[in-house]
Image (tube, rainbow, N blue to C red; front, side, top):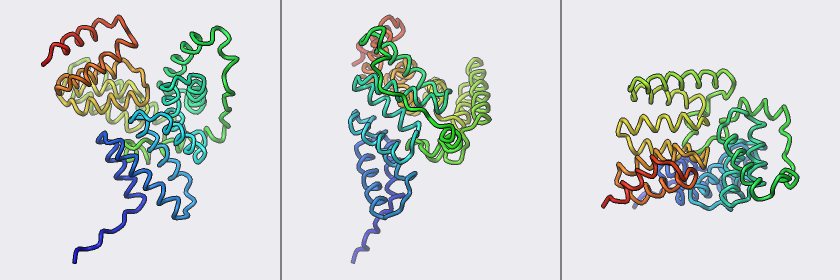
Length: 303
């Protein structure tokens, strides 16, 4: 008789969801995270942190799949379990922005900056929302905002040490044991600058190694992902370049370099449709970007 298949635990389902997320199988990731959540909730374990991470991970999958409404629901649930989790706030802000709910997006981006002033995606989001709200509501746009919550100092201190707990699926193994404190940020910046120096010398492999080390200490630095993507393009590691651009765009949904470099990688992989979509995204943000215009013309001639 065939052996009965052992039931998977919630941790195994979560890990399987992480693997599907990394592979770009976002619908399957949602299904696996949902099963994991159901099992953990049924188990009676009062582990709010694990549940919060699962909801945040599922939210990331929904966001990748374009299901912004479900992403917002899951982020809100995650934030109930892990108050002021900056990953969930960033994801919810991106989803609000995609749905043109700019006031709510602005509030979430501003809340993230209270937790950690050094998150570029939040600064960029605030700038975009400020422009959008000024265009829609005029000079008095601030008067129409929902209240921005004040992050208590005790929360800031605890999150400075445990921010990595709210990591995205592809980052869990990288930053679970890292402290997200000032020393780590300082070291990450130094490693990034070493990588930049190697790029200037044309030593892209060594540069990529430095960027990888930097991201291990600070996995929320958008430019480090786009810089490493540039290295991967030079090294003809096109799938890796796309992965880094995906991560950069998850952190900053309007990052021109990430769209352009992903477009370059897609061109090399003969993904004509994806390449055109990426270049059109660049031109939507920067209509006069001549480099993107030229590459788009080249790609459109591809068979």
